[in-house]
Length: 237
Ligand code: GLP
Image (cartoon, rainbow, N blue to C red; front, top):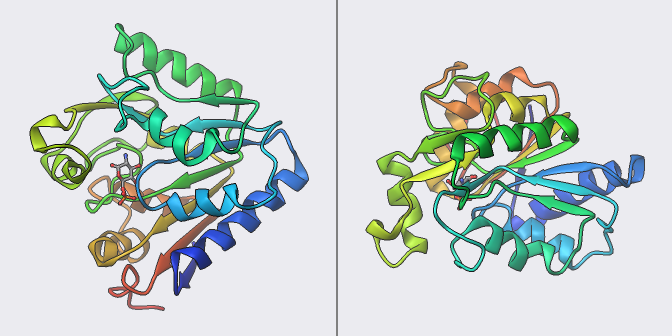
């Protein structure tokens, strides 16, 4: 893994922007896997303020809460529109449909989208427990799109965005680790002390389903962009 320790999220955003620009220079119809959460926000801001052109590109998001529609400001479709898509149009944006009546059919539909549009470059954040997308600890590494029961730790961490803990959805649809690992390139962002243990386990720990992001050690093109606080527990800096 190529670990870049940056002094600000803006600096991290510029590193990622350059990787995106290089990818688009190779193929303006590239497929980008995108993530929500606070970690990629500085990157989306930098993209919006740049002259990057996504109009021929495709995006495929990692996940969506079950039961929230696009009018709900906590849905990931709402997040992506307000942070990126409304300001930087793509040819097409795919997200799981959290309102699907038949969730099993929705996971199959999403797998087909990923198969039809192999991801060139995937962005990831990381949960405090090492989750990626909504692939919680214990999730098999070869899994494809699936419905997830969120762990108490993730519900707790995400409660800050909702009125209270009870308002946090209990389930989500997530791209699987198997699909994430098929992406040709991956960028993982992590900022702040609350991510330090997960980052240490991901980079220096053993590869284990207890820390879903540790699987990234098996991928040959991962850039990890972290600040000093998230890097604070690393032995080798
Ligand atoms: C959520 C998302 C993840 C994200 C994680 C961390 O659980 N499903 O994709 O990486 O939160 O979020 P943040 O970047 O806000 O710390």
